[in-house]
Image (cartoon, rainbow, N blue to C red; front, side, top):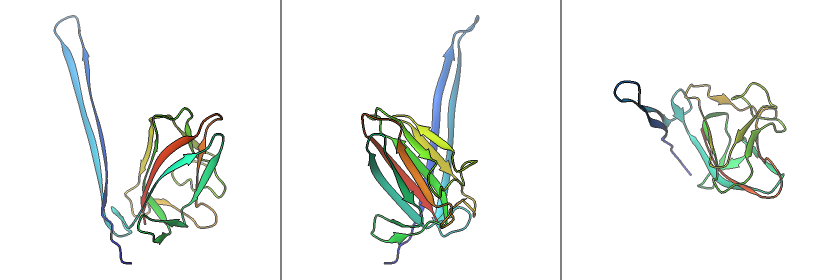
Length: 166
């Protein structure tokens, strides 16, 4: 099957800081946003692979994703050589945290070391974007596995994950 991908990652942060100084009123409005558009391809600002899933991890357990051996939503086998964007959302109903990283043959191009772990609290989001041609490199056999873990016992955790790359 021939497929084509165009994608975008949009980030928007907004807020109003209000206060009452000695004289008058003060307010500061923040409207910050970034849009990363990816055309079809494998170069800078390009991607041709998309993988997403909702995953449940039982108490005190983990799952590992082999980024060189996934199946996309259309049923095609896909092999990431580089990740351009990743989002991990921990469902708000979780009691435990979701841990990202520190696996066997860990994919950690986004971190300092293979043992690094990011904690995503219930209702929280961890996101990475690398629009460069290199992206975050995936290396078959040595740096290809993304570990996702439940931080504790007692309850399962549910997470959504999206990977965009080439």
